[in-house]
Structures are given as C-alpha cells and as structure tokens.
Image 1: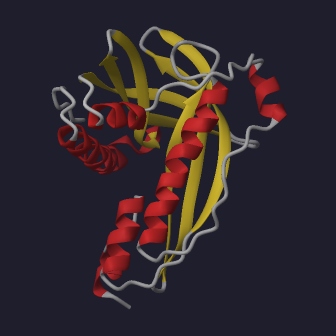
Image 2: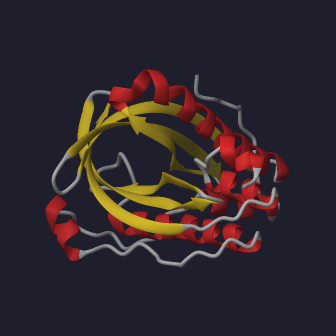
Length: 234
C-alpha cells in the first residue's frame, strides 16, 4: 500500500489522478442520482433537479467515496432548464472520464439520462435550446474574441429529497456573468457541497475543494485572456 493512500483519500477527480500518478492502485465506479432539491436563494425559494454522481472504489486497500454535482436544472431563471442541464452534466462528466482515462484509471462511461417521471414530478416544460457553457466562452476567447467575466460566489442552503429521506445540504455555487459580442449570459457551476448539520467540520474541507476548482478555472481564463477579477470562498 502506498504511503500516500494511507493518509489521503480522494475527494475529487483531481485527487484520483494525483494518487494514480504516485503509484496507487485505483478502482473507480460512478453512480448517478437525479435528485429533486429545494433551494433557498436569497429571498427566493425554488425546486430544481440536481445531477449528482457518486464516485466510489478502492485506493490500494482503502475504500473511498465522494460525490460531485454536475448541473442543476429547473423551470426558473435561477438555473438552466432541465434539458440544458442534462447536456451540461454530460459534457463535464465526459471531460472527467477523459481525464481519468488519460492517466490509466478504468471507469464505466455511463451518462445522465432524464427520466420522464422526474420531469413530471417538477411539472417542467422542456426548453430544448442549447445554452452556452464556460467551455464555449473559453473556446471563443482562444479564437481571439474579447470576453469578460464577473464572478460571484454564494453558499446556497437546500434540501435534497431522496426516496426515503431528506438531506439538508449547503451548496457552494459560482455564477459567471459572461460578456461577449455585446451580449451577456450567466453560467453556473456547483463547486462543492456539504451536509448542513456538519457545518463546522465539513465547510472548511469543501471550501478548499471549491477554491481549488476555482483556481483551475481561473488558470484557464488566464491562458486565453478572459478579463475577470478573482473571487474565492472564505
């Protein structure tokens, strides 16, 4: 067993990749959940579907599990439409699969699907139009277009509804107000979450995870000269 895996269990895809590079033996399996969640956003309350993937497996002889939020979708302006959220979730999921595959970690490449029952549950009318992703703006900037971004970060309280239980969760959400070609649009990313009842112990850990993810995004912004001001969770 590697010394690294004795003390550091993965909480992110990046952690799995780093452990693999250091010689750990890693297995990884994804498990999907599309979870109805009640959000309390400032003075607004709304229900959305959150697209979660729980990654689990072994690092050498130690078991691990962590989850990642890939998108959320609803019928409000608070987040993308559900059809868009499916596309967004699968886009970033496939990118993670590619990263794992590139470093030699085998994983079954399942994707999110939107069951009709979930749509009926929220009484959503689907908008099939494709929304812009952060990756689209990065590509435009690399092609020489002038892109600006305004970053805002929030802790958003929510209640997840599973089949036989409810969980109070706090989501670390980042909103990127993107400006391109005289038009603006908002891209959202969930960068971490934790059980609200474990605020004292879990919040600092998820702040580190979220800020690390922000640092990687900001590095991509810098590489293609997107104009922005850095913001981090505190």
